[in-house]
Image 1 (cartoon, helix red, strand yellow):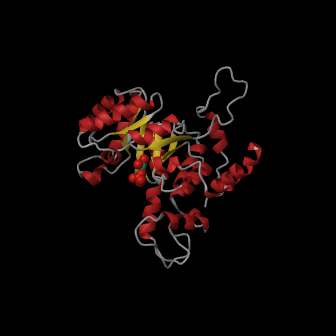
Image 2 (cartoon, rainbow, N blue to C red):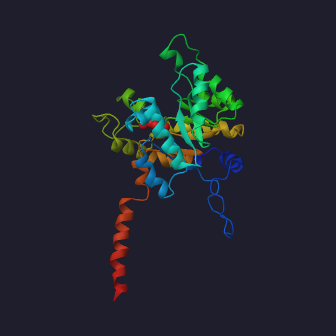
Image 3 (tube, helix red, strand yellow):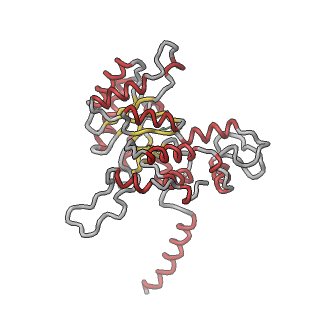
Length: 310
Ligand code: G3P
């Protein structure tokens, strides 16, 4: 697991030059104590998941993608647009990432402008690459070219599907406002491709009896693995750690928006690594204040405080 000492020494310096997230309210004598804390976004297109988090002041933004929109019930571009507009209106002025579905630059820029027209808080999400995998005729640099053009046009972008630190660097160079590294998918990949005969450290999901559990990305196994100190060898968090370190080196202000969470341990690791934003699935966020020992402690306090009622 990532340890506090693994934090790049420049994290504090860089955070100090980034925007203050929690500003002190007018007239308050006490400064907000976490003015440069990372922001938490909800990674969902389901407005009924967003609403309670918004009302509780837990989130400062939302990220969506075509998969999340489909899961939220969108079955046409029109219905997707309606869902996106409802989210943008609900969350304003906080940012909402909306992903491009067009694949060639002219159509992408046109679509980006339409999406940006939904609201001032829209951030246009652009895949960093993968274009050639869809169509051999497409240019590998389509995403970066579009990001650069949108930067020139004063449109905020979130460069998505980041799986290594150089992709993040090139996206920042092109002018991306945010980069979205998918740490959970890195962890999934390691789990699926792990070699069980190797010692701990070759997969995030390595378990004590050296057997990979059946049924895919098992969250309990993942937690066990992290507790064994294996994740630091290479896992999703290494991706975040590297990007933050590189951005620190050059005071790059593109925000590192850690994405694709599978469990609360990864949330802790991203906070240790110095991510600027964490976009987290709603069910994970709804559980952040609970812990079995907190529940046990609360029960004892409530029981003991009954004595004051006499
Ligand atoms: O924000 C990116 C995220 O939605 C990807 O998550 O769970 O599909 O890997 P996942």
